[in-house]
Length: 576
Image (cartoon, rainbow, N blue to C red; front, side):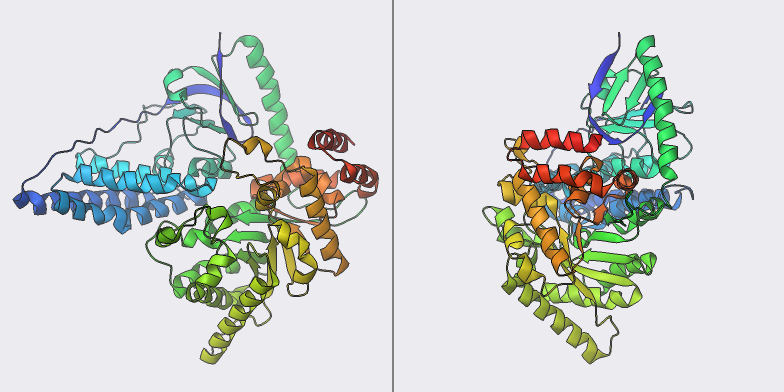
């Protein structure tokens, strides 16, 4: 009799194969005092471990196979950057001297401090970077112990095996280059973990956050991995196995058919053109953008440059990062959001100024206006990059014309400073505003006088409209994308933008949920921006929608007064 394990399905698809367990040894961290005269030697031992770890990561980076997903290189670079940060590579030396403790204990204290900081972050993608810190630190511990890291693989591994691990690091993925796994299963991780991102780029079924899979599954056991439902079935009986083989065949055929949509223009059945763009987190996401046929980037979060470091990146570093993305996209639009820190994304240098309730405090454009030098530096870097392609600016968290006016003033000052220096840039760069609060919706007609486009950030709009902290489990069930109030705010924004001919898009999670595609189309949306993995599913929904046919149904939804009724109507809409 088999068992079913439930986790987070991060990549759709069904895989059937035998389990291959990857072992991870627990590392005990000893704590002992050292004589004062031994401090230099202990620091030297620590330095040697750092050098050995760096050499190991660089060697792995250099051995990435040509056909590996681009994300592998990016993640290994991230690990090298984490290793080189003073928090791990230098500050333990200070602790060794101050506390006269062994190197392992000094490193553990730094790790605990870093993990506590990550635990305070609410945004899932950024919080999951804690796993990268842990993996890098684990390699340093092993180097200190004189035990170079092993990927824990038991060899040989049969083709199409299913890898079962507590967790996987990018370095593990490189070491797996000679194996062809059919799926990944891990105890930890989430939808935005590096394992999930690499699995998506490989288009490989993966279920994460199974908690105890590594303990419950035995080497060689037959597994079914259902990445659609987030289920792993261990040792299935013949009836279940036969059923999943049918589902697997149907899934493969469906994906092949969807890939055929890549070059198809997204147009509704009654001939209305729709634009499908991608959200990206890192420059390395561009390969997936192209693979799924997106016609531009609707949201590129610039925060990745600012987090996990001691200082604000300089103008040249920012410029090079922005230019790389803009150049790669060529004439296609690249919408880069100005710095959206604060709230759940707090860099080290902002820790001292945390608000009591950071989600309602100094975040987004408020933080930028409070730090004009930092903001001006970013604007100059963005403007310099604007001459290399079709770059657009997107400003987060605006709630008033005063903020918008101040933002535009800083932009003009940045332009003037570059002009004075003879530095080229696009003088007509387009500027957009994010609609993320009810205040922004109320003020939308005024905003539209000053901006070139609008992007609705549904994640925050829902949070602020319904007074639901997305990171609070106690109220998470109240987070409702189809709450009537939310839909009316989205509808109001789209109508106002349409009246004056200003383009409007949705860049929140709602845009990538194909169950909501018809609803958003019916509300008037013609531009969607989403994770590239969702693009073909949304395109298929667009192609199968007749706007005239659904309009009467949309009108009924706009009159609905409760979410339960709304969900019934949504099911009916998708059944049309």
